[in-house]
Image 1 (cartoon, one colour):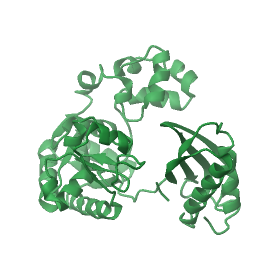
Image 2 (spheres, one colour):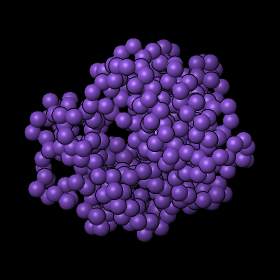
Image 3 (cartoon, one colour):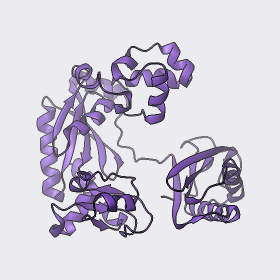
Length: 366
């Protein structure tokens, strides 16, 4: 929808919904294994919690034991020994996601898919909560899966509202409710602020959303840069001018990583494995996308993760140039500790950029 279209919709009564599926992957698994309903279900790796791997998702029953996404499977097993561990089945999750998104598109409005389990909807209605309940009901009827829905007057507020709605609820968060709901919360409760940014803000004495909203823009610009600093400040208001767009999502990059069942200690072996991961990644890239930046992730034993990146001299799909960048990024690490995981990521030239440089035959995903 064009900016002019958004302004017209705003005059008519613009609302944004953030539809977030509840425990999506675990819920899909329970649908095909009804006997698991009510039990702690943990999905990750090949389903063997004695091997190295991480939790992709956990049911609410498993979360009650402290199991969280991204946690090592072995830690999840210690916290929840009675848990049911299942292997990741990406094809089935993609199929279930497609059915959900097709249902959302039956409603009047614009649907922007964010991933397997979430989407924005731009709608025009006098009663957004009732509309959201109708969306919930139709999704459950058509798929057997529940979602929580945030109602907002901006994408940022709708996104945050869906977290308050969980599970199976609807929650409204607009500029009117924002100060009371978000003001006292820590800054990393905002969409777009992580732990590192929160720590930097704490150095300025900024710990809550209210404090960030009152922060000196010049101080933020000095700390984060002239563009990023002011943007971080606006997050504290919940405002944004982001457009809900039905255009297909174009990924900014792709990554590929591997967890090793036995630590790597030989530097040459680490280099060979990184090269192999990079080649596998490049081999699956779209031929029409060119790489502008590469990054290498290393997880040292027991579980410390670090990363380094390199900008390439020019946008390219040439395997040799990409591998050279990966090698340079890896050289930035002190490989003096055992390594349990290696990953490589490439970032693409923005879609629509004017072609320059090499476009030799090119070169997916964690």
